[in-house]
Image (cartoon, rainbow, N blue to C red):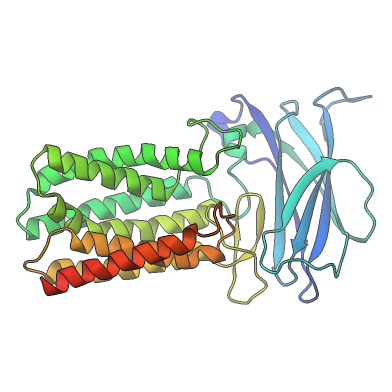
Length: 368
């Protein structure tokens, strides 16, 4: 039901979080499920006033058989704070109806309505409202603080590795560390701005928006380059010794995405799928976050070997080749993600450019 976080539970605005679980059949065609949530605030007698009761229906289309137990979480913000008694019941509406395999179950909320079809078990529970920004990021499979915690761990690992490699290459490690700390703070701002831009159209502000690891990387690397120029440190050498740590940080940070409920993969009925949540729907998915984590680790390992082995050559080529290779690999993984694309040819163009840059950088490093 509602999730407790006692020190801030009573802060405004308040919301109520409710989760309904059901099991999917092991075979058949995609189907539609309607989940009806009814609730009444405890202690209310007689006719309920505005905000003292609710009756809403969540409709999930294209639910895949074999996608395991499904957790459907909904949030209600227009309710009176306090304790609530909530009942939820599901109905399979169109078993056997065709749908696009692997597509995220489409959801829409409506008012109360009748539902005909196979009934799923109903469940009742009691819970309290809580602080809305916390309620909206808590759900089965999504752990509060996983993303910032693991991204922060990745930053620490990156800074330590950068410092070790800087000393090994006779660079001013302390100065580079200070530059990188400032760059990391700028990266946090970049993470918020990137998320805000990617989710434009939603009711978000920069304060309430989440964060995106790509925005962090862009902001931090951009700041690192500018600061290196200002402080008279070789930009190419700095970004090269920073590359392995940066990629290992992304490897760790992607686990934060997996456990935090973002950047999710498409639903699947395959045995290779892993149960995970986007904070609203928990079900078996392609673990794209972990695939991207593996990609970052692999490229980071190659970059580390290159930094340790190279004694001379154009500075900055390791960074350019690694980031281009990561960008190419990430584009290859995009079709596995539950993320609508805004352009038809942008992915192909990005792959061609990233591949060409990676090959050019590798060639430059090997033959000059």
